[in-house]
Image (cartoon, rainbow, N blue to C red):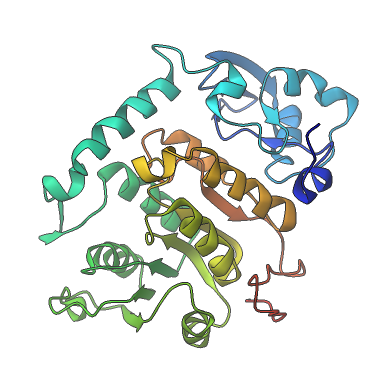
Amino acid sequence: MSVQTGDEVAGAGLVRLSTYVLFVDYGAEVEVQHTVRGTVRRVDRSTYEDLLGFQGFRAPAERHVSWIDAGVVVSPFGDRPEHHGGLRPGTEAQLGRDYQDWYWRREVEAEREYRWLGRSIVKMPSDLFFYQELIVGNRIDAVLEIGCGDGGGLWFFASVLALLGGGQVVGVDREHCEDLPAFERLGGGRVELVHGDAHEAATVEAVRILRPRGFGLVVVDADPRPEGKVALLRRWAAAVAPGGYLVVEDVESPECLDPGEVVEEGIDRFLLKNSAFGIAVEAARFPLLKGRGTALRRIGNNETKAPVMEGDGAESPVR
């Protein structure tokens, strides 16, 4: 006889949008595509807005039963491809899986030394395009990168903010880089570094002092272990400003796929405990993301209680 965990009991009867659902806006109507099942359905805007209410977990009504059957909204721990009948040749989800398999054979962005404004940047072009859309479309003026390495990602974020009139970029890493980009050339903003272990509360506090009201975008690009990524998600969620985004990268690496369910279950456990967060539906437009399925948005408003750093008893929200 199987025994339900506390998270399973807490999540019983709740559903959220599948991360494999793509919305295509045609004005009066919106197309609902399922990238694993290969299904397409057009709905009116009121139905679309109703579905958007499931970015985070909530209880469905009778009118949502057909969407549950279609895999558009899913129960906790029920959003892996096998829960949707498995990957099918020719589907967008299969394309994304093939891309990840190709990428991780050589960690392509490092092998091919992609550059941004003359500086090597260890990120894929598709991810950069997604990030600039988030920054520009949401008028984000502060970005935090956990695991900034040689500063290529910081260079990208700072250059985008400089084009938009300036902002703040903060990078966290355990190591000191001796060859950082010439950030002063960009103007219109500032780049600050915090050296420390991203899993430690002291490092989180050092960043909080730099930006008490939080960041519009937090990118977690550290710790290859699946359990480490889930821990960093919980640790740094409090640094996300209301309306802001949190993306955990490299979640389809061999290390994360081998024990498969660790990251996916960690995401759902986090969402069940943090009702202020939900799935960032914008990410579905980018099937090749290194953070596929782990792009989240803080959907709660300023009055919503901010997430608490687990294990520290912290109570003060980041605003």
